[in-house]
Amino acid sequence: MAGGRPPGDAALGTRPRPGSRVLRRFRRNRAAITGGVIVGLLAGVALLADRLPLRSPLQMRPPERMAGPSLAAPFGADSFGRDLLSRTVHGARLSLGVAIASVAAALGGGTLLGVVAGYAGGRTDQVIMRTMDVFFSFPAALLALGIVAALGPGSEHVVLAIAVVYTPIFARVVRGPVLALKEREFVEATRALGARGSAVVLRHIVPNLGSVLIVQTSVALSWAVLTEASLSFLGLSAQPPAPSWGAMLNEGRQNLELAPHLAVFPGVAIMLAVLGFNLLGDGLRDVLDPRAVAQ
Amino acid sequence: MAARTFGLLGLSLPNFWLGTLFVLLLARYLRWMPNTGGYTGFALDPWANIRFLLFPAITLGVAMAAVVMRTARSAMLDALAADYIRTARAKGLAAVVVVGRHALRNSLIVVVTILGVQAGYLLSGAVVVEEIFSVPGLGRMLLTAITQRDYALVQGAVLIVAVVFVGVNTLVDLAYGWLDPRIRYQ
Image (cartoon, rainbow over all chains, first blue to last red; front, side):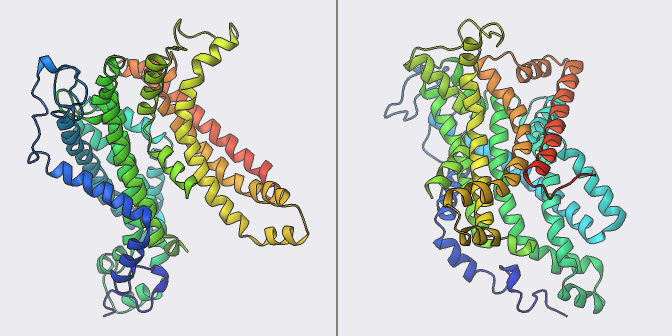
């Protein structure tokens, strides 16, 4: 059998000797490193939120209402006297959790649909891709807003909405390379050796989609964080008192003139997360260069 | 590199946060509230209308500017590498003419495409920005309709948004033919 790895496949970039060369290019790419560090820090903070020496994100201390930043509470306290640093840190868990869950669902569903459409071709391809086109005809953020509005507020509905919006994007991004890979000699050779369709797809086509999917996932995550934040800003994501960045920012807006720090810190958190994923995606695109696959 | 950083920052700046910061800056530090007295129609008082819409417009425009800049940059890089640019240079044309007329015009096709897609961002981004600046627009109406479960109004608003979106993208398709005379529609 053709052992999965096409010989001398330079155009597909990442496959020969996975790791070493890509890793070296990644280390030389400043955008990718910066993005990776930001994302890593935020993910670490989100994972360890309970273990960090912080006050409770929900406990109210009325005397400290809208207190400015101090040594005891570096980010100050919100309008109920809750510690803003702790709320921001726990907000990272919620925001990143929603983003990762929704993008994972879209990645799985979109890849499946894209691979099936691209590999099967013909009527299956037409049915799947035209259905995806229907989703494309709505502005993305508005579609997400509409889905959440129809289902009612709640972070699990936001996950579903973002997943629905992003599934067609993954499907479309995956289908192109699948069409190209399907015609390659190594796939033809595998088929000629009598491999079943599912084996060809799983062992020979899907592994070669890696670089496209990695880049798209990073970009999708940045969009998911931003969308979750704006839906939560409109009061449609996690409900109070859960700490969610967008909702915190909206709360801070009510007391903007008295306590500007309430609107500043959650905003910085959102921007850092989005910037981190954007930098990482941009850097990874340079490193992995999916254009080589498209050609 | 500096341009790339600006582009990424603009892309990562949530518009609802930027809007909030503008309100903060204007209300608390500059003590200049352009939106006191509410919305005035353009026909009634053009100056008041522009003053009212200035900051919401900037807020919505920043992210779009970043997207357009990034797209224009990569399209220009592609265009400048083309053979006809070398020919134009070899003819002895001034750099301004080569870049402005030959490269820019050809890369505008990509930029215009992105502008069409971004119209969707404008229409949906307006929901949040109108809420922040209390603009009595379509987006804010849509949001109110959603919270009040007024489905007929939601459907109507979404229909208008979809029609505008499709309309803008049709204009984009027509612009292709104008930008590149080789493109013809039957």
